[in-house]
Image (cartoon, rainbow, N blue to C red; front, side, top):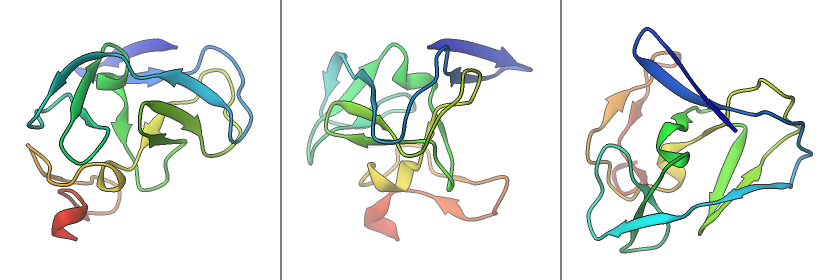
Amino acid sequence: MKINCIANICGLYATDNYLEGELLFILKGKYFKKPDRYTIQIDKTTHILDKMGKYMNHSFEPTCIIRSYEVIALKNIQEGDELTFDYNSTEKKMAFPFQDLKTNKEVKGYNEL
């Protein structure tokens, strides 16, 4: 995985090819009870700050899904593709809700949908 930043917007990009359903990496890091801008919710009450996961951007057409600690390819991923997930699929309530630039839909967590 490679982190790439353009104009202060960072993302996580594949450095290899992956097949749909393949495990990309395991989330590891410090645990928190409350979300912040960079954590990922991994169960009902736990958020994790992963050194690579914090650079995964939101998409309503994601390349990955997060199941507990696992980041899994939702479709075939080619080297150079951005690794994204739908924040509304994991986050009960976002610490910093925002509006998706492509769809104008709100991203605020599944509790608010």
